[in-house]
Length: 232
Image (cartoon, rainbow, N blue to C red; front, side, top):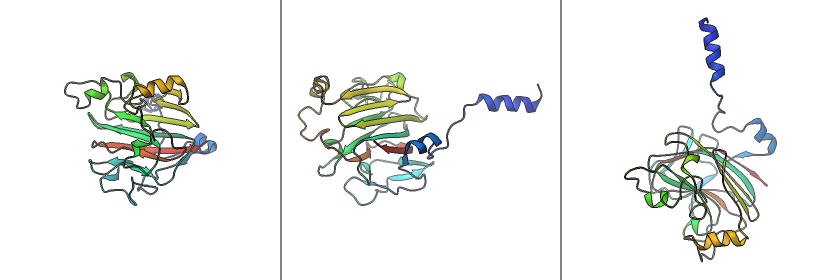
């Protein structure tokens, strides 16, 4: 085999990845809109602030929490029913989250908004979030309500793909193509799960009909890119 043929064979054997912060032709047809232009934080701000705090930056073509103290980052716009997608990469033993339908009349966004967990999910000696991994509060989980599985996550340093579909009282969560939760929050089954969680008795939790998308500041470095949404 000559060098030209070998080069062609190698090129064909390597999977093609979409460029970050771009919509696919299919997503454009379906009506998705980018929430991040890959250059700046236009359309985003810190919770209950007019601008993002300095700890939130754009690095490596991604929205990046460089250190704690940035506060939770929220979309300027509020959303009711939607199909939300993004890629994320967490630091070693890092913790973050994605919340939805969060409103600003409370001190924190998680008072109203449920959370999709973002975490270094793999159990390891000295993991500072062992209390979360032991409960299954790992990447892709409906935080503290429906546990996740380690095998759904990619290793630290790799990009994970998240999808959150919210329509009325129905919530479906995905991680790297795996359905991690698929629930109707009006059912007795869900109410039983909620009753066993830390959110039991919270008056405003998961009650708002619309709200902001939120990236959580849990003090650990985390990155988000290719952030898009379609209203349903």
